[in-house]
Every structure is written in C-alpha cells, then in structure tokens.
Image 1: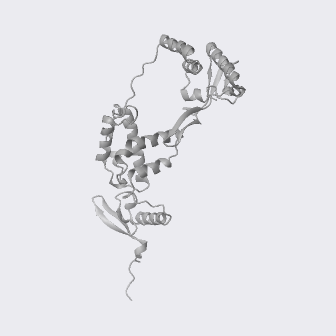
Image 2: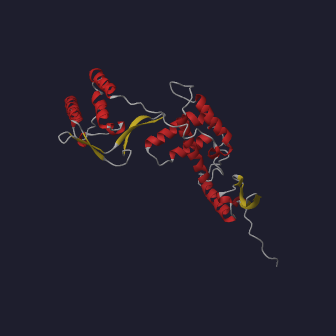
Image 3: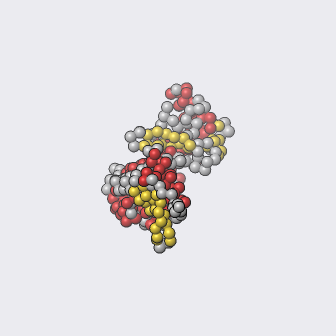
Length: 307
C-alpha cells in the first residue's frame, strides 16, 4: 500500500501555500470566498500562523463579519474604526468631524487595500493649500491641524494592520508637517489694564456673562471646569471652590450638539481659593439666579448653567 500523503483540504476549506520573498519563505492563503492573499509579515511568516488566519477569516465570514479589505472603501473603514474607539466622547467627535470633512472627500472611495503613501501625501498638501471647510472655505489648514489629521489617519491605518486588513500602513511613510512646523503660535495675553477694560465693558453691556468672565479671569479655571461647576462645589463663606469635573460640547453631524461632563484635564480634583471680589460676584450671581427660579440656586444646580 502506498504511503498516505498530506491530507488535502476540500475546495470549501481553502488552503495555505508557501512562496519565496527576499526575506525568506512566507505563506499565503487561498479560498474561493476571498481569493488569494499574501502577507509578508504577521500571519504570513509561518504555516501555522497562516492556517490560524485562515480559520479566523472563515469564522468571520460565516458570521457575516468578514469584509474584504480589497473592496471596502477607506471611508467606510474609517467610520467603522471611529465607532469602536474607547476614547473621551469629545475626542471621538473630533476624530469623526475631521474624517468627514477632511479625509473622506479625498480618500473615502479609495479601496482600503489600494491606498498609497503618494495619495496620502497629496491629501496633506491639498489640505495645507485649501482644506478649510468652514466659513473660510478654500483657505489652507494650518500645519498644526494638518498634523492632527495625519495622526488620526495613521492611527486608523495602524489598526487596520493590527487586524490584518492591511499588510502595511501607507501613512507610516507619508510626510505630514513636522512637529516644529506644527508648533502652536505664541500667545499674547492681555495686560491687567486690557482685562480691566474688558470686564468693565462686560459688566455694563453683557451682565449675564460677566460673572463667568470674572471667575475665569480671577481663578485660572479652564472654561470646561467653570461650566461644570455646581453650587455645592463652592463655599462662599470659606472662599473656596472645589474643581471636580469638566464639561465639553459634543457635536456629531446629524445628531445636534450636547454637553458631556468628564474628569478634569489632570484627572484629579483640586481646591482653589477665591479672592474677596470674586466671592462678591458669586454671591450676587447666586442671588440673581435664585430670583429667577429657586432651583437655579440649589446645591446641585450649575453655577453658570442656562436653566
């Protein structure tokens, strides 16, 4: 009896087979559902890892989860990637906005597996020349904003490599603005005299907003921290305020805007002292709020809320 050879897979099971590269032997996958796929790194390095990748792909296909990266548009992949991010809601909203406004118009219809470094570099240059999509549409984006968009795209494509949708991250070899070019512009804060002029104007012409402007100017609170401040956080007799959280506006296309509260930037609460003029401003503000409605001056009410 002739010795038995290697067990052959049926056509529906697919197969793995070796091929040679400059780096040595690699393994490819072949299956009727998704053709032949080669990967020079990751799962393609050994027969065993290629077989496991084949099993994983078959399992995904049987569940309806498999999307052939050679056919999936880059825009659809980016939306899917953003949906699964475990980041702060404000960060995810920012990613989605930049994907929608700045990446998808240029690369959204390009098949993910066909995306090239040349196309990505062109995107960055086009954004710098005329990428604004707001009331100043047609003007160029700053190097800082373009670099931020590059960070988003590179992270998304790195995730595609990790999940075996891509063999290589084409954004890794692209040339966005450098960190030096994207340096934040120098800030020119107001002088004490300029601040006094502004607060005087606000007290007279914008009395509803004056208490917030005064507190921001005299305490150093961040805007989000002040907007999340509740009366229970403020001890006017002790002249202190405890900063426990921060609020931010979240805007998603088609969903309107909403306010989300989260941790402070440092992630830790802190106690700040209030000077006498600030205590006086807050006492008057609380009295005015209570005159509008008692619930606006209760402990759980926002100090600077609209309602």
